[in-house]
Image (cartoon, helix red, strand yellow):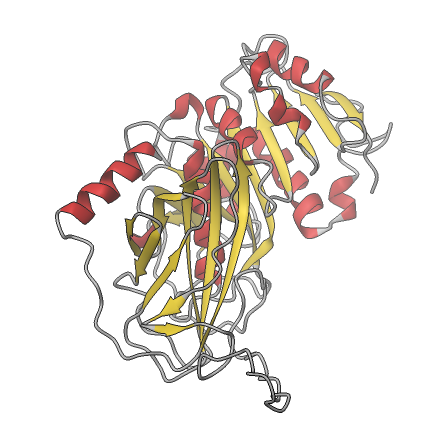
Length: 421
C-alpha cells in the first residue's frame, strides 16, 4: 500500500492523472461502503449510479473529514489534495448508461476515526440520489414525490444481475475433471493475477475462490492443476500473480481480487457481467498464502477461509484468529509438514463456537497441488467448496460427523468443531 501511495503521489505531481471531459450528470447516487477495516487502514467500495443522460466519461469528487488518505485505487485514477479526493474513470469504464452503475474500490489509511464522506459530486453535480441535485425541500414546500431507485442496473452486492456480457475469449491450458472444462486467462484490469474459469460458463453464477501462493510468490500458475480443477466444477478461481510471474505477492492482492469480482459482475460489457456470485467468496492460501488469507478473512464479503499447510508465525498476530466469524477449514500435510505445529496451535486458539474443520494428510508441506487435478487436496477442496459455497449437503458429509467421508478408511486424520449440515 505504501508503494501504491508513492506511485499515486508521483503520478499526480507529474500531471499523469488527467481529468476526463464529459457532460454533467443531472442526477446521481453514490453507495460508499467500508468493506474491511484494521488498525490504521481500510478498504472501501464505491458504486456510482447515473440517474441522468448517458455519460461518456466521469469524475467523482468528495472530501474526507478525518484526515483519511487513499493509498491504492482500482477501476479508476485518483488524485488527492489535502482532504479532497478526485477519482476519474479508467479507459474501460467511462461509459455509463442512464440508470447504469459504475464501481471502483480503494485502500486507505486513517487515524482516530474513519467517517464516511458527507457528500459526493459527479461531473460537477451534487449526488443526492435523485434527479436535479436537491433532495432537501425548503420550508413551506410540499412534500416531494419520492424518486424511484432505478432497478435496471445491479448493485455491487447483487449476485445475479441479468447476464448480457460478450462471449468470453478462449482460455489457456483447458482441463480438470469437473463438468466444466476450465483454463486460465489474464485481464487488463487485474493484470497482476491469473484467473481460472470454465471455458464455457454454466447457467448459474460462479462462486469465487481466491488463492495466495506458497513462498509469497507472485506466480499465478504455481498451483495450476489444483486451481484449474476447482474452476472445472463451476467456480471462478483467482490466483495472486501473473502466469509464470515473478516477484512477491501481498494480502492486499486478495482484497484487490474481491473488489474486482464485485465490480466486474456489475459492469455491462464485461464477459463476467451477471455471471459471478459475489455473495459466495472463499479466501485461501498455501503456506505464506495462508497467512495472507488470514489477513483478509475478516472482510465482510468472505464466506469461508481455507488454510493449506500454514499457521501464524507470531503470537502477536493471534488477533487474526480472535476476529474470525465465518467457517474455516485447515488442510495440512501431517506431522511431517513444517507448518503442522503452527496450524495445530492456531486450531487450539479458534474462537469458541466457530465452525471449523482440520484435516491432516501425510504428504508433507508440498501438498498435492502439482499432481493431476490437484491430487487429493484438489478433490477435497472441491468438496468443501461445494458444501460451503453451493450448499451441497452430500459434499458436506465428507467433513461432518463421526462417520464423515474423511473420517474412516482414509489416510486423513480429522478433527471437527461446531460442524453441522
